Length: 288
Length: 322
Image 1 (cartoon, each protein chain N blue to C red):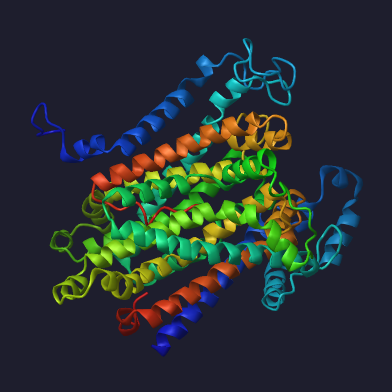
Image 2 (cartoon, rainbow over the protein chains, first blue to last red):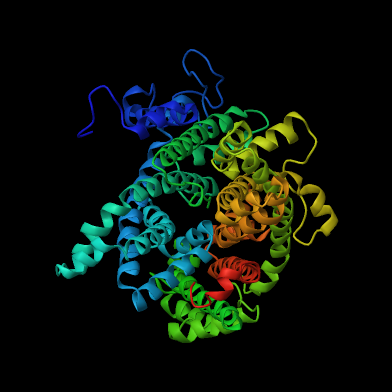
């Protein structure tokens, strides 16, 4: 922190570290990210390798046993968050950049630009996310690329709304009028006057959309519309294990716990950080 | 006020037309037509180009896209979604029974979720920034962090397998009697409701806390109005406005959740029908299901907007603003 006195922390940071739930959330997220990054080097078997017999119980060779095909469940579990996290991350980043640009355009130009952008946003909001994905899959097929595009499409509308609302409160302020008098171009005003003032909002938006996107990608994989087998993925692992829930419930329970700890952690951390920054995360949070 | 109402209704129609255009373009024009995506590679290997052209003509796919769109939309507006490509059955016959079952789930969930969320929201706002508020807030965060396929399977494990109280999967037909559907709806509704309550109670709490900090509440306090009267007579109605503003998001989230829950429990609803149709690449059913989902969101959102106009004098006066 430039200008901070050595040995002191900014007020926001102190408030974050004083809230136990936020710390728990941050730790969960860090552990998940670390596991996702290091997984290829720490897994005992290849995630798609038929290492043993089907449904082997937990033991010395397989710490969490094996799945229906005899693949090591621990390896699949450790690898299971990577694709979802990647798809959610790239998709949401695209949504944030595009949403910030379109939201600022809507607020700055107003008039017809605003009207067109906002009616398109309304149209997107009217189509529930899973239905939106469903309508695209027959024509576009099912691939990681399509999935990223879909995530960006799903989350861009919310970002546009948030950014536009914030930008409209900035627009009447005098420094904006000053930049107009200086003869700055619209693009320059949006980037230099508006963007810094919506930056912290965009960070919170990113975190909120990220947890929601992870839920969406996992749900799609569970429905058979997301990640395709044999990729190790938690949503897919639950759907593969659900047929054996009577005899081997752990095949469902382990990936469920992995997914939920990640999303709960992310939401707790977001909530705490947003509160510390004086922003409200609640309105933006919605599933699907 | 009348112009505000007419404007909202007009906007709703415009959005539905845009949705229909999107649904049509996404499924029919890019990159192949409905016949291409319905046929498997095996079919394509056997069929000659002449046969394909004949099938296209029979399905009306040889007409220009714009003509087909207008045809489809005019049918859709009166509930006629054409026929399926694979079997030639009317789409209406396939979707109306499941639609009823899905609406049943949505209505049951909302009927239970709204009062529960109100109680929770009021509790959290009454003791804001104290222990009950913290517990409710953390509970809500966990609540909407649970995907339906996880909470649904957890409930199946707990209450259908370990404690065999409820059936794990629904074995009723789409036309099953309403009363039988109600009995087996307990676990599916319990699954969707977790996220609904979490979302609604947070919105209500936020609205309540905001209005409790407002000037008119301060004035009422100074005038000696009791805190209970302030909360129930002044703050609760005011907190409904931001909550109703989120109606579109709530309904959209609810419908997405219902698709997952129907798959988890094999509930014979439109969501399950949609997933099957996507797997079979049955485009006409996909179009109909998605369009009907959007109709549901738009209608509920319109009703919420009209309630806001009725509830909030500020909105009534500012008719031009959206």
